[in-house]
Length: 405
Image (cartoon, rainbow, N blue to C red):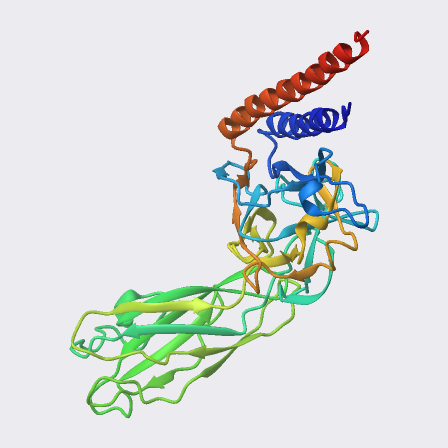
């Protein structure tokens, strides 16, 4: 008598129960992918034996296949928790050894690297000093906590409407200390090479109708003397016709580069019959700033936010995909390693090619369907019992033969 079929059935049911039990145990493991035991029947191969006479000799576990389907995305309060929505794996580096994971629970270590709970470093594209992402070979992403270097103002833009109905100031000549000697004024902050702020005040004085220009403009920096008059002329439709931009230069004594020189552009300013108003005010300088927070965009760009209101790209997370993800080797800690069966990794920025997008402050939960696993557990339990009964029946038949006289 043959016990092989029943024994193979017991082994198969046991392996399937192992896979189910592992799935249930990891139902709360972020980024975990459920496994499924796949079976194949077994036949004895012999030359000249017809198919009609063949009887199978049991089953075997052909493969234990992981199901790389999308897990549910759960929102968290940690901006360094990142979920992949779509295909792809995070590329991790441990002392140069590259592994792959779907678990996006990251933090920053003492050296400024983005790491997972095992200490493996997240890799991606680096950014230069200006925040430009450089797509090249992936490197360990680091968060630079150094102060952001200040930038001197090189361009200031001001857009105003000067009231065409305004009368000449009652006090003449112009005196910055006397509001009755000018029609309107506004100010903006500029910065020197050390990031020191300087207040630039702009005064507008309505000229008489006989003058060559409609308004005269005066500028001063901080409490320094006022500069020379600058004529501003408008056409009959209220559009500024004076050539722009203007060059501004001020001597400073803060230890920064002097003079503080920049271009001043009033393009778009108007002279309509309505009250004075500022409709645009900006400049491109800023003081130094300290890192106050980071954010991760859907395309993987890691951006730092600074205390001076500026932001700068610090790097970009990359994803890797494989032609055969089931060829990857599980090495524990939610990580896989590349094998010949998986093929070479296809590395790129999130959202490119077949790669998915990222969602910050979220994690991808395990894709284990706990209800389905419990049903599978019952099914395999019954299969185990049935195969055990098959062996028991074979034993009873053999006992009958042994007892023949």
